[in-house]
Image 1: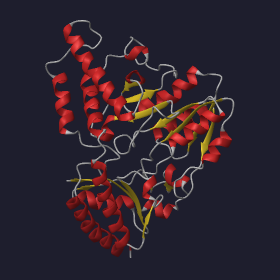
Image 2: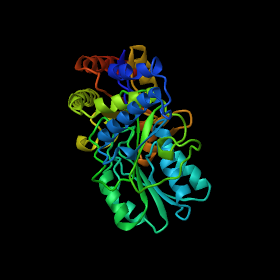
Image 3: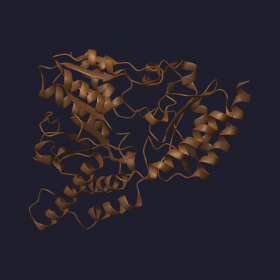
Image 4: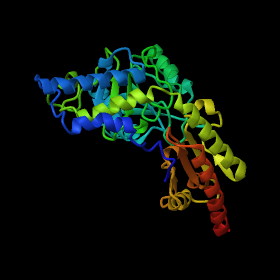
Length: 381
């Protein structure tokens, strides 16, 4: 199998599995217990917290709170802010956010919050001036992703955080789920207040993530019970998951392998665009403002789901990136915000590479694509 869907999830690294296994077997203590077994697992929880803080460039490890993943972290940042600051009912976000942010904001909007939806241009880029002009005295939170999961477009979140702080006292949240482990993150020098990650996006286990909460920022707790995570998130810590997240964060802190991933992505993208004159890149062609592993390409006149199915039959895993719903004739929120025509969105395929991919795999995918696209073009007439 060739796996080119690393923005959806990644393989668990062997080192991560090895780090998790003892806490599924002999090390069974509860981290809240004061006896030796409890202290042993508490130590790994805190060591993992340190590794996540290092990955994110946080100033203090107690700014890291473990969660069940990116969705919980995103929801907590937004819902917790609204509950903690009830007098501030204005939210700012973008039209291209992941569903975890977008649907949370839509629900709050239906319950009386005022949400400003920032636009993007045809390249997928934000206009910082629109953010600047949207800030108000009652703005409670601004939530902007660092890297788009469909196109790989990067937003200048450090710059946007400065804009927010210069014109308001709103908290600034970043969905960093598809950025962490792929590009450098250094939160301490920025004005970013909260930052979400999920372990399974960088070769850790599913079901665990973290929310960075800068000291002095205090969103309301949504999970009520015991005093775990310094009273911010109740529930016995999933030690084996946290151990896996810590090891994955340690491995991901070394970004050297991403240089090779970028070379693979560039070869794949260049090969496709050179071979098929009807192929179009969705998002900016400026690779300096895109994730180093992601290409979203449309094959005009074809159906992305059919391309995906043909590749799947060849043992190649890619995604349509949630680009399009053929039955309803609607493109994804990201494609709509970029004003990508439906016919182009319909033929979209997202290819997202990872640290375990190889050039041989890229060359095979190019060969198979050449045959598949040719077959589908003939069928389409």
